[in-house]
Image (cartoon, rainbow, N blue to C red):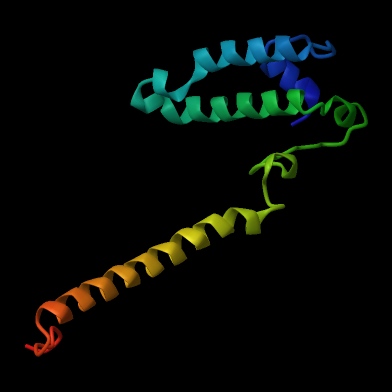
Length: 133
């Protein structure tokens, strides 16, 4: 989506330069008016399409796509996941290590409990094998 289309969709004049706070306020206002849950069942499909366009317009204006639209370039920024600066994708080993310790600790402690129970059973019944019927 081009930035001028996004501005019009959010209620700004085509060549204005709204601040990020103005864009956010306009986005919240449009979301309240066009959220699909506020419409009857037969109008939900249309409301959902409009809601997606409003969300795309907000993303376009918040990501600073004004420069791309001025040059006639159609830019679209899609952000997914967590950035590397905040712990995403860069340290998978650090995330996996605690879970590995939890699993290994559970297996080891479970094995120790079984061995202790076996020794206790063996000491109380020396001639009886607990694993035979």
